[in-house]
Every structure is written in C-alpha cells, then in structure tokens.
Length: 93
Image (tube, rainbow, N blue to C red; front, side):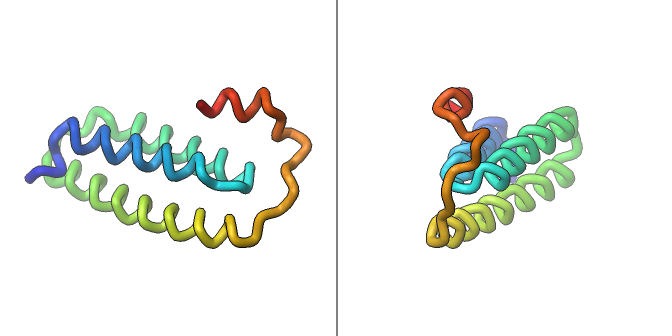
C-alpha cells in the first residue's frame, strides 16, 4: 500500500509538525511537537507493512484533529505566556 512509502510518511511527519506550529497556545504547541517527534522516533524501526499502515492512518487522524483544534484554539486566543519569548519562537523554526 502507498502508506508504507518513506516519502509519504515523511510528508505526514512534516505536515503534523507544520500544523502543530500554528497553535497559538504555547502548552498545546509544545506538547504536540514533543508527542509527534516521540511517536515517530519510537516507531521508526517498524518493518511490518500492516503495522506501518496502521500507524500512518492514526497519523492522518491526528493531523485532522490538530487542524481542527488549531482553528478552534486560535478563535479564543490568549496572551502569550512569560516563557514565550522571541528566542523560544526562533527555536521552533
């Protein structure tokens, strides 16, 4: 199946990271970025095609959830936290 191709999986990873960086809320943004990186790091050695496709589909579902939550979260934006300096934002890029 197409989901097992390295290019498709890396594209999903990039999309998840890109969408997570759009979160206005520092806590949600940092949690999502840590979680995505951890999940991909943990699953990088999987060889079973069925398991890879299962993880890929779960990633697609997570991407849709993140997109919805980013949109909703940005409707109700709050002031930046004290730890959100321009230095921290530069580290995200």
